[in-house]
Image 1: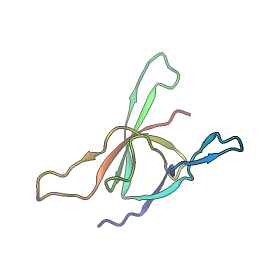
Image 2: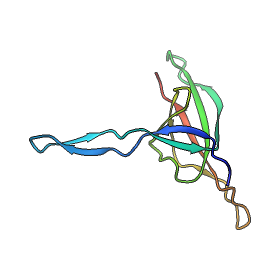
Image 3: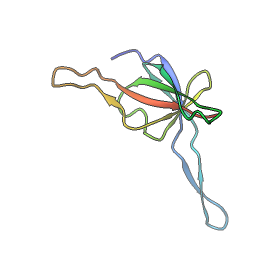
Image 4: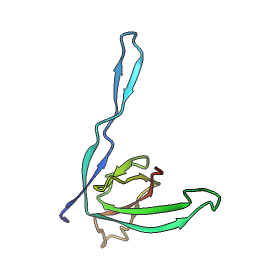
Length: 111
């Protein structure tokens, strides 16, 4: 398969802990490094003209299927955070074409 040279961070699995009264405490997971083939900022669109932050950046990440879930927040090496949105784009067309990768779409986290 392709050499997965690019590394991004995704949230780890949360852990459940209990305090001394038996109340459940959910702690966020430790971020996990994930290898991907690459990514690109595909476009920036203008949103609400009345908003101060009206530009929305969109990103595509090329990775093996199942790498990210629809609610993951991905951190790129430059520190930028992106929300994965929806299901990945799968280009497996017919029995003779399987690229082995899918495209995950993400939008920039406001900040």
